[in-house]
Image (cartoon, rainbow, N blue to C red; front, side, top):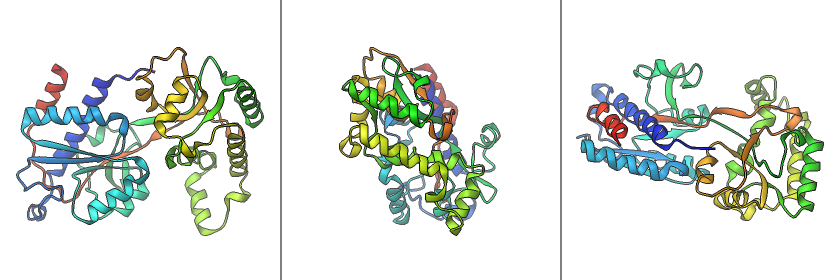
Length: 329
């Protein structure tokens, strides 16, 4: 699993600057409002709030590079994912900005409807892959952060995909690894790693997952009577029985235990590649589907979107300059 940092970061910053330029297209009414990020209206500061810890250092480095080239300060705000949205709401409600921020999906966009800018007319919108943009009320309000996938990341020396095809084979594999003194399946304490990602499976396996959620909210169906959720509960019970408790395990420790061979499988996504790149692995890493109800597909989709604060008045110089800086370095 290799991570091409320069290509990704060049793309990332181009995305950010494109969003900033989009924010410049506000109407005259916006010009009377001071930028919530702390800018005095002179366009000398851009604030970006995001929770992807894997790219924090690289994003900080590029922010400094951009400021050096253009004179426009880019300030990166970061936090852990568990309380990111709560912190974002607090900052927005107290007029602290940020200029640019990330949203996980439609529900969050709806909660922040009065803050999210309409990006429908931005030049980059036609280049977004079909159905990958974040739309609300038929308006584009978010640019996909990136398409990511998650599933069971496994040590190829310890696990074979053909031995993890369904519930029974999953249990047998956990039992066998436990007897060898290896932690079979690693999870970490962060809510989105412990349950957030995994709980997608029983929803996504419904014939129409959006309709299913609507029925749940209306009280027409329950998780307790849905076969996929029943089996998901069995998976979680057997993971608890044979694996180490995740309640005292951080994300860093989960990755470290896997990299050192103490854990055979972890539930993670392609983003873990940047963490694993810090270790000198002596085994090959693979990723396979979580076998709930015979599922044979990895979970793939847009994990987050870039959004722009509706009232931000940010004036920046040509995007070409920063792209040239990245390419020349």
